[in-house]
Amino acid sequence: MRYLAVWLPHLPADRILRGRLRRLSPPGKTARKAETSALIEPAPLVIVENIKGAMRIVAISRKARAAGVGVGGTLADARAIFPAIDAVETDAYADAALLTAIAEDCDRFTPVVMIDAPDGLLLDITGCAHLFGDEDRLRRALGRRLAHAGLTARMVIAGGPDTARALARFGRSHLKGSGIVAPGGEEAAVRPLPVAALGLPEDARLALFRAGLKTINHIADLPTLPLVARFTADITRRLDNTLGRTAPPLKPHRAIPVCMTERRFAEPIARIEDIEATLADLTAEAVDVLGQRREGGRIFEASFFRADGAVRRISIESGRATRDGAVVMRLFHERLEALADPIDPGFGFDLVRLAVVIAEPMDTSQTSLDRHVAAENEI
Image (cartoon, rainbow, N blue to C red):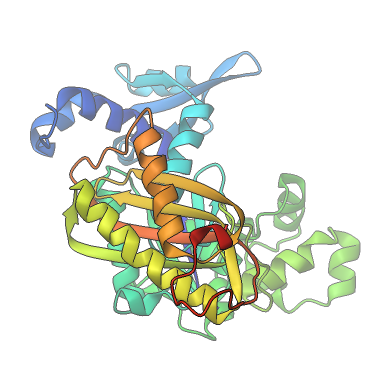
């Protein structure tokens, strides 16, 4: 098993700066960073929230971090040092919406994407790396997409989801810049991390710190019973998960399909004729898979991944299980024509995917000596 953890440390600030850049840039054009950085962030940007009667900093931009502004302090203290600091109130709903949109786009890399709220993602990339060349190329491809979208990200690949998450959020130089932990090297990689990487409640973390147990290495070899008795029963589970000894299954953002087929394009496609032709080819492939499994699909979902990161999805349902490609395409064609808001290809789709969301057992029966069986017998 291999997992990729994505941490977006400046997600709220990046969202605000992206919005400002979009308003400054003419449609269809990309503004130069050097020309717009002073306009979109004239002073260090901080995100604030009213906590117990005081405006406290809950998130910062890269520029604010470089200037020495930290999270957790009050806005008044920060302005005593930086009088012109740029403060914007937090918008948790908008941040969650952006994180969901990023998760939808990450579906192009693997169908198993879990949202690690409020500012991260976990991807199960087991068996997916070869589609991009190798794990390093997959990681770099995702990194380029995020950077192009104006998002700061740290990414780590490891053999356990909690291992990758801990290293993405707390790892430093021991990964040597590769961001990839070789199979079997998880425990050695996370031992130097602080105990905060375990994700324990604040009171448990403080108890460990006061006892002099500041890193995972300090507690990794301690006897289980005394550790649980003194601190918390949850600590051993989190410790085993982070060290890579166990790997809990992810809870994906979207249901894992029964089967799926897809096409990737070096040059994005935008013509509706090309889109429907691609969808017809994918339907034929999906029908073959269903036939081998002696199943029929009940719900089919077509996903169209735009080059700019937007994702469009269309679902169809049949009255009963079917693997008649003509019937599936007819339903998709009717669905596309009936849309009040047609799919907008923008600069084009670079990935089209067809997923069978729900399937049922379906035995093959010969109803005629003619190889052309009426579609009514299939739906």
